[in-house]
Image 1 (cartoon, rainbow, N blue to C red):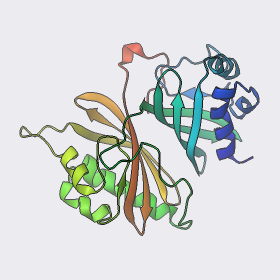
Image 2 (image 1 turned 135 degrees about the vertical axis):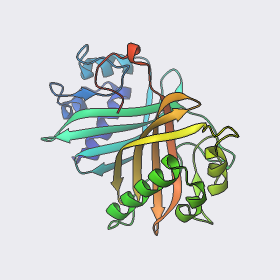
Image 3 (image 1 turned 30 degrees about the horizontal axis):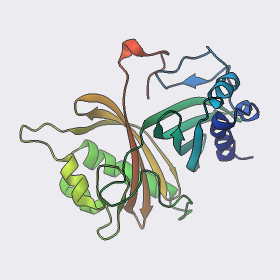
Length: 252
């Protein structure tokens, strides 16, 4: 079983309570970056078995592999419906580190799209590194650097599918959302990129910044065709203040 399938089985076991897939995690070395999850207080098998009794629904919409990393786009229905990205780092055949970013499921957006629909299979198998570089350039130039006039250089002019629940397809909607107010403040302010993970034509960028002034994590998944961004999914989550953290590993 490859790493992607192992992570699919692990996440699905939240729903089923099956203890078997938890073996992919090296719990002795596991580093948890969800600030609101305690480390070592409860084994994953026991935790997932307890969660399964609440009747959760877990759907792994798409999953990708980049070297030692697996990243998955997921939808959950516990007591509320949520959309997430899960990132795992492997070492010596086991998962040893985990990050996530989860928000309430909203939408459909003005273009009628949900937060998770669209293609799930990779293509352009030889373009991983060029696509990674292209997304990193977009994030640094436009999202962090604020060069909004460069949007059209990156986003496909005639077919660009947007899955953010508050935006519509095309560059114009994103440009309006990113534009600073009259006093120069930015409601959506990307400040730093932490990692850019890629498999073929799908690229996930993990960034830090502020949404409405609140310290936030931005996870943006892009699909590319011929060096242009043609599809975008994302989640945004407020970073809990330091005094609320249940581990010391940090969100990023």
